[in-house]
Image 1 (cartoon, helix red, strand yellow):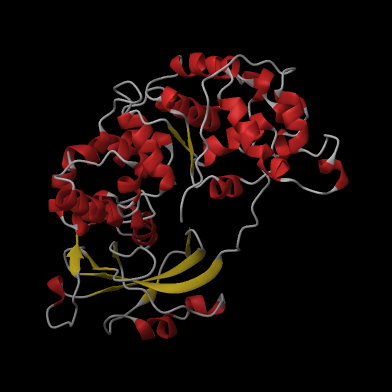
Image 2 (cartoon, helix red, strand yellow):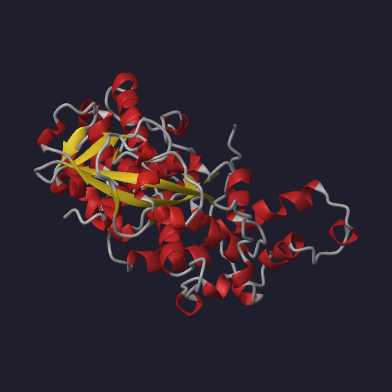
Length: 408
């Protein structure tokens, strides 16, 4: 799908009483003419995009934002000015920041980069090693895509990330937003990637009653600035990201601390809590399984790499097919053991472990059994993992299960 690009003119001075306010009124149906009569024109449909264009080329709010952003603590991966960053570090950081907090990424990114310092090292490591290094960060498809993309970078781009958005977006796991962020932050390209935080800030500043997903879809995940913005789009992007993360939060926004609050149409109209418009989310599917914690005489846990579905590529204890929702059956070890990997004295232990995935609400009922060291004679295709290995390279889901089963 082709992206919708918005080309911006040079910044110009702005005040809330200038041409901005009539434009904002048109976006909300306050203008006279066809917008009031219910007959939408092409100009009316374009009004939201023009409101954002006017905002981003306005000198006053962007200057306030830039001054505020410069005063914020520097994150570990921002060791160079925006627009001149290491492309590889920028790529890994942007992917890791998806669905993972800044605090967690700050602690995990340095170790990942030490282990895989460049695309060639990442490609040569093998998918399993990359997934293991991703342990605990969740959304493991990100790790698999990183490895596949690194292989492509080595094969097709001589081990260096390409500069064009089209070439970046063609790599596995890199969508239009991530491509735009890398292009702006590493190569100085005049684009603004629309992540959730950036989109929320822009919708509130412009006072547009639209969902974040709707804006991102309409703009193809990015806003393209004119060439005059080359070299400074990265700093603007980071300012918007930080503002959305620290101040203009989805819940409990800190409007009193906002450096651009005087220019915010949502704040002026008392609609901060209404913007962005919430998306209707699909309810998570509830799944209940038995989790089989098999230990040998040395206290090692039997594990298998999942070949498909949730947590694909990660270590996990064997799981049963989905079970019926029946609290009484949770204590029936004999019935729960019918899907166990080997015949043994399986006992229900601890309490059910609940873990939320993107689309699945999973509950695992742990069962534990012991076999002689190494499981000689058992038909098992996985590996025996020491508790220390589990804590180092297993998913949070597995760690919760073995902890509940009393394995330390």
